[in-house]
Image (cartoon, rainbow, N blue to C red; front, side, top):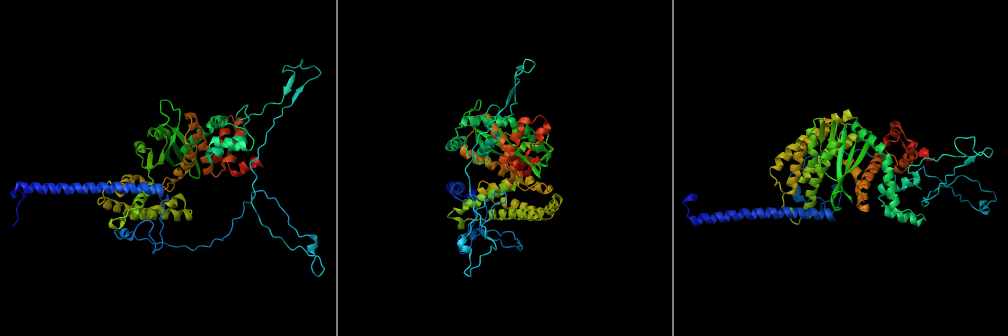
Length: 528
């Protein structure tokens, strides 16, 4: 016999409503607990786990490094065919020492008495055995003495000359006038600080150990003055960076003291821009007190082309410019799915959870990168790469997108997996844009790699003492990273331009000092 709810007594209906409400409350609370535990496991993985996002597949008799068998069986991973090309075995042993290093030959010979055979005949030299060892000489410091000869006429004692009685050889022009700093010393200080992440107070102690007293205050002033002298070069870099089809952007935090109207603990930002000719890239750093979208909008004023960024909302305003086409970053997408795997690795209840979606997503992304890797090995032209992506990458992207839409409807949006899927779907129009042009890349890793040296330095010097110092750091980082991107050694590059900057007058003089207009042969010739 079936009874309608309305026909039941009020106390029974009330009891069912209470049970129903409590059941939903328990489910909500458990869902919230699971979400918080997942975030806690992710935090533990970031603090104590491996930083690499690479999947490590271990032997079957050992614990799987990224997921348990129970997780794999929940969803079938997309089938993948892997071709293993033939390879040659690398020769083991020590690598030869660089040929460009100077050699000092030490001859080891037998004593004259041992150069006679038992038969009485003298031994003949038939060859030699050569082995090489590496030696190092500590930093060599020398003083450059500028001696200017003076001349005078002893006959008339200058009475017949309008230029005075004494003539002296002209003063040689210096990058920093009336200072003891030579191009070599300035290059060493700047490279030590911005390339090797040695703060000035540590350099002060290193100089003291070799008997030279240079205060960190003097070095800081020199760095700022050098940055001012290099400003015309960086202004030209700003023009050059717009000449290419793509500009990549990223930003990181920096603490700057003595900012007007702000506390010393207030967070500021260092922005990085990478663009120009893909074969001769240009990198620019800019310090700003804010992370506002106005920063990239101002920098890109008048630019037409592609702009590649992560999913930070501050970049969304760039899409209002019809001349700018935003490109997403698959590295950030993969990182979010990798975090899901990291969090589940630490879960004791992994075998009881339905999982595997993060691995499926990473597998799709891996297929896309395998296509890029093969194209790079084949050294495809930009047009050929475009065709390859249309033939191979586009079907994978379409399949990945269809899977994401289906799976996201079955995944709680508040969990790490749900957030990773929703982030990917929100970014999808920008993520797939890289297949439109062979000059584009699926990620923004080149810009992220350029910002890492600054992050490493920040861990050592901790903060900039003044906004002028932060601006100087940004300017010098721009020159260093552009030089490195164009395969120049930073120390040699700075020595080269510091010798010539005092004599630069015209725009063409400064153009000749741009990193992508120089070669290592030109820099090495300066020291030969």
